Image (cartoon, rainbow, N blue to C red):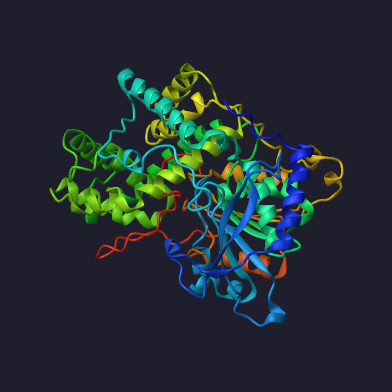
Length: 524
């Protein structure tokens, strides 16, 4: 086993960050035309920033993080520097963020800020991490029973152990250095490389967690930060209990979808009550268990596709249409909705590898299968939809060979040293939907209490994961005002929910998944 991640507040790592940031500030980033692999067109440009693999050894091995940028469109006198974005994961890339500048919802911000995206360590072309062959990761069809048998559980354990062996074999000693602490430290080096005195940052989902860790480690470097769909940062919930909370929340959101389908029974004919809609889903699940649709859609692919209804209500109509068509004998809409995309297999496997390494390294997990089995068997009695899929994704952490880190006490500035304790970060803006399943609302309230002066904007009675830039103008106005002026709406503000989906006369194009990496069950 490699050594553990450097503990919070470690003076050696702190010195390493300072040295790496000074060097990055001198070197800057040479932005040029983006490589073809990034699929980003001019005027977006790309570059790289060098960061230590191990901040306790800043003169040792370095890795290069890929960075993308589009310049602000407004007059120079009104420009406010770089706005850095991370979409979550762990394991998601923000390289496409500069493309947002062309969309109407971001027009005012794109005039004032350079939009900067990047791929965190291990992601994409930033020293990519892998734990198994992409073809093996994307294998289909596969099974996903809500109440697995003892034999199925034994296979889960065997697969988790094999996955861990693959991570160790492929990554070696570098595996220990994929952590939230290092993601926050990399963000500090990126800030310096961009020539920014202080950081302006928007993080979604997991990006809210390592953004909050950054604000605790480097409070004097914070300019403005927006945290969209907030992970519960309480140290005792990272990450095992956050996953249990998430499974409960997805069950509630799954009922929201079934109730909506039942209200539109005359359109979909899947049942006039949520129980009858569930019966229709279970009928399809049983049928797919006997004969996978198109040879690739088994019960696991069905569950993964319908999990998206919990992330983004733009999936509500496409999912209902696909289920109705399948039960009437037409599997094509379901295949289109749920089939794995071979072209995405490498990216999906990479995202999953980074997710696993970061979460397993970050914090202690139960080390005995008996604990996992007891907790999740009990949980599945009241929340069967996502519970065992969450277990399947996170179970490698039970067998992780590296000593886990200790989660930072976010917001406790004394935890990172007496000098830092005298500096408080400026107000930050938190966004959360009340019925978000991936990052339950309690997490936003937890961070709100931990960051004095923070402002919480709540989208009431809504559940789409990731609220910034969507159809809720109230939320978008609060974000624009804060990022452009620094003003928050006070300690708390509420926005009415976005309009509920309506059945469409024709199938709409499928939206981008609200999950990063797309369609992978697990924590945000």
